[in-house]
Length: 418
Image (cartoon, rainbow, N blue to C red; front, top):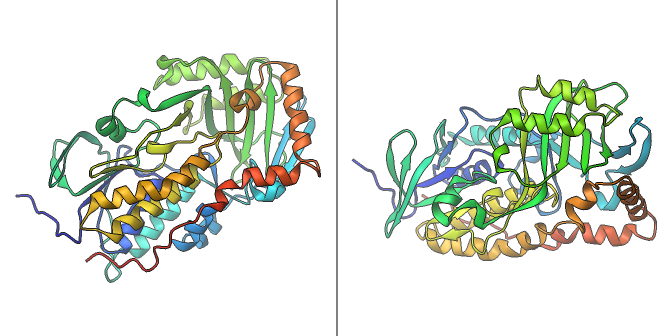
């Protein structure tokens, strides 16, 4: 027998247990709605690359009460330094440059730790009066979605079928929810010309503590390190310009062979990176791609975060879009819990100006980030130096802070759904 929710306590399914999905779940559960959250992985994923909070996303984190937890996990990352093949410094860019909106922000935290802060907030809130918690189901994913006039029927991989009033896809760049509800990924994904990989490894000798260190090589290859909370380890990061190769997806051996071939003979610490890669237990590899869609909602189904508007690491706004998007989506659902379709329409209209600005890529994109020639590398460093000059800094600060003009909605007076 299927139990239907009441008009004011809609049954909400969230697909994806990352930052966007858990942020939506936290806000809904605090307001009296117990969402079901499914995650394909068997457990929360720890670690991951460093992400940042800036502008509206920091305001969202403050309004959601996340800052004490974020402070506990915050990385001590003080800026970025570029080095040559011998490890000699070429260029240094402190974190407070450009008003804290440069490549390294004032608040940096690993993706896994930020997710852990959200999970702890959900756990702390569960059981309080009016907070029913979240129904977590790990190792689960959607097989089929069927929307009808009264809701959405969902067929799960486990073989069960359930009815929901609202389905939220927060399942990332390669979103299955997007594919099922909106169409193939190829319709919305733009390959930006490079692949990115990162993993945890022992910090090599000579790497300056607390600084993101980067080295560019001919061929459109960049290798670097980002600090971990534990100074004995760092996150290796590799960017490789390459034609798109669908065969690389989910083929770890082929991905590592591409990295091995690209870094061979690159000097600096590239040999150490190759050796550590083969032993890493958190190896990550994916394309640099951007998701752009004319709409993120259809009826009772909505996308949030990378699933609907991935900006790619080039934009520097991925976490901001995930948190701000989740905050707006949950806020609009709570305004009219009995009318999900209207809530999703308002969500899209309210968030679109922020996303359109946040998705803008820096001039030159990956060509500037990873030049193919030695002359191009020297030119990129010269441009970076120029941007830090006294004349250019005010202009760069304005360019990099455009999303701060976004007027974040106030949902503090939104009534709880009971």
